[in-house]
Image (tube, rainbow, N blue to C red; front, side, top):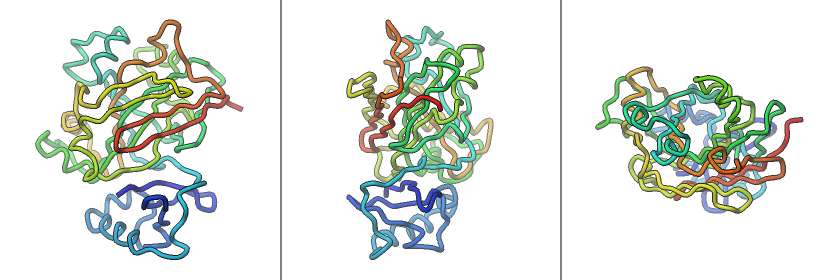
Length: 291
């Protein structure tokens, strides 16, 4: 099942993608939770009811998939946990100590005000023009858990999505902590769909992931080459914190980022950036200047 967030009377609402059409889930099943964290928290029963309602929907509950205004796939996540330097070739191009990286992942947090939906603009901030792209696979947590083993980890992942982790590089490298460069408003594209785990290879492994900037391929790799795969990340993260339904894990970017190029390549106003994750979707965002 593919679930998206679209604008309905100025507010985000859930839709189920059915081919070229989208079912308004609130119209088809008004008793179900109206956001993805709530729907996932309802477990298998809620997800099965959503799927059945979408398949049976008729009339005003069914819309064309064209012309939708998208919101971030999960507009209200409890946590956005990001993984840095999770591909060896990217760690090398960033001139990182890869021996340290391979022992323990670089984890940091983003906030919800950074999130932007599919086909919505990413914003180059007033403070800097060093705005970089990062293609990433998202793993979405389906149920709460703490101290989860790798063997059980995928039982806690409900599905996957696509992320462009726009990074303001000069702010990222102002200190050893990356928070500033990773949390400018409207800097992270998220979408277009949440795709349930049954439609994706276990752990999202073996998927081609690409960035295209104005049609030119800038990143082209495979999730198979992540240093820390999804089960390992779940085990490590839940040693520290409890994961809840709808929490988002942004699993890292491969080589080919803009700041590592000579000369550097930045996303600039007027550009279009696409992140293509095999079998999950193509996330597309235009780039604009801050007003």
